[in-house]
Length: 144
Image (tube, rainbow, N blue to C red; front, side, top):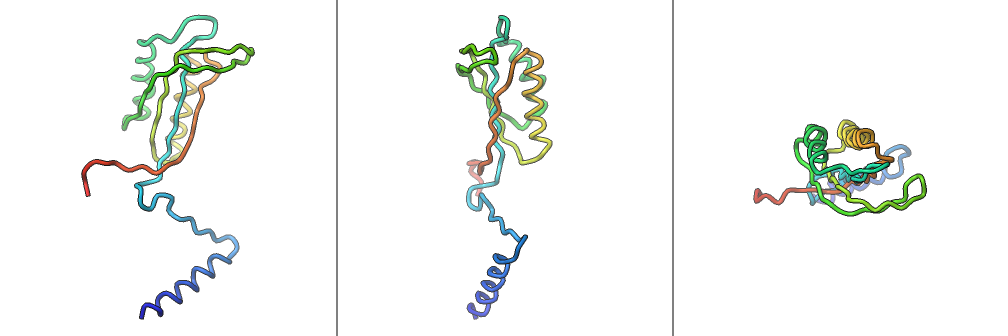
C-alpha cells in the first residue's frame, strides 16, 4: 500500500524538477523556528567638524526614532569602531550598534533604512553602516 503512494509522489516530484519555470523552495527553517531578518546598524558617535553625540542625545534618538519604528524590541550595544572617511582620514570613535530582528517585509526594511537616514542627517554623519541577514529564529520560552 505504501508503494502505491510513494511511486506517484516520486513521479510528480520528478516532473516538477524538470519543468522549466517551476521552482520548489524548501522551508529554510523547518526545525528551527521561522525565517527572520536581522538588520544591524552601526552609529558612529563622533560628529564631523567636532563634538560627539552625547549619551542624552543618543537616548533621545532611541526613544523618538528607533522605539516607535520597532516597539517589539531591539538590542543596543556599545563599542569602539574605526573607519576611513571620505577625506581619507582614519577615525576611531565610540559606536552604538543596534540589532533589530523583524519579519521579512518591505515596511520593516524601509523603517530600518529610515532610522539610518534620520541619524545620518540629524547628526551630520557621512554614513551609517547597515548589515542585512536572514536567519532562523525561535523563542526558548518553556512552551511545548
